[in-house]
Length: 136
Figure 1: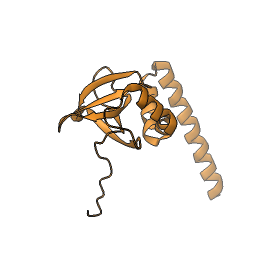
Figure 2: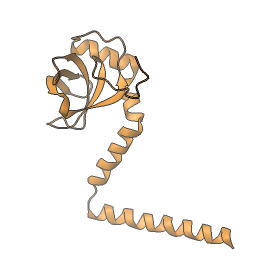
Figure 3: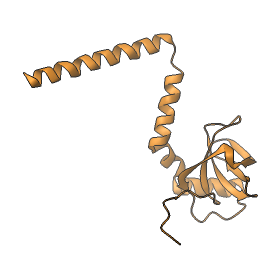
């Protein structure tokens, strides 16, 4: 096989991020591959029920469970997730942190956005004064 730059494959045990539906934004694990369009996913630790899901509504993450048997049930998947600390790895990833920050920004009310603007102005002025002091 040639040295491919593509690293994320649809495989049993691959951790996926759901893009649409009632569980959008949550992660799950590919438990079984149905065909070229769908897979059975399960998210026992993220309250995503076991279901058939089309690939076009999934985003593959770099995380994958090693040695997960095909067609594993929820209990087995949960054990593998806890043993490998996959949820912790996901929550500590830059991708998940950025999603959380965007979500937090979206949930701000008008006054909170105003407060953030004032804090940014304060920080910007502090940086400008420090740069001016260093130049002088």
